[in-house]
Figure (cartoon, rainbow, N blue to C red):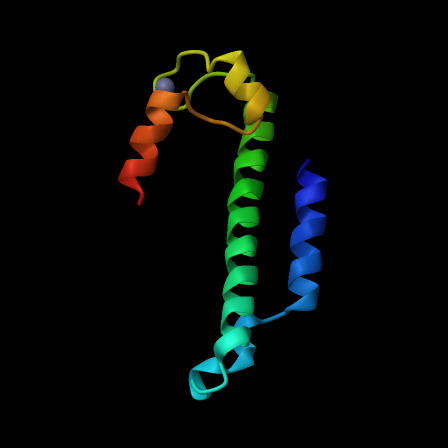
Amino acid sequence: MLADLDRSIAILKGEHPDPGAFGYDNHPADAGTNLSDADRIEAALEAMERQRGAVAAALERILGGTYGECVGCGKPVPEGRLDARPEAARCVICQSKHDRAYR
Ligand SMILES: [Zn+2]
């Protein structure tokens, strides 16, 4: 899973090594498609890197023997949730608290 994410990130970065290099700030008139393209890729990259961090953290928890425990409250994360999101670090309640705090 981690390797898959790494590969996807590398591909996205390879195709668009530096989204900022489009210089669309200097050309507001013809920025239309380029801007949304760059935005879309940047958003995808951001999401992937966030997920990569979550997966890496999950692997660390597996190694540390705390995988499956909520990092918020220490209670076991429900298995159904781990099936859907193996990298989930928190139970649903702590995750929603976390999401609210960081948005
Ligand atoms: Zn929790």
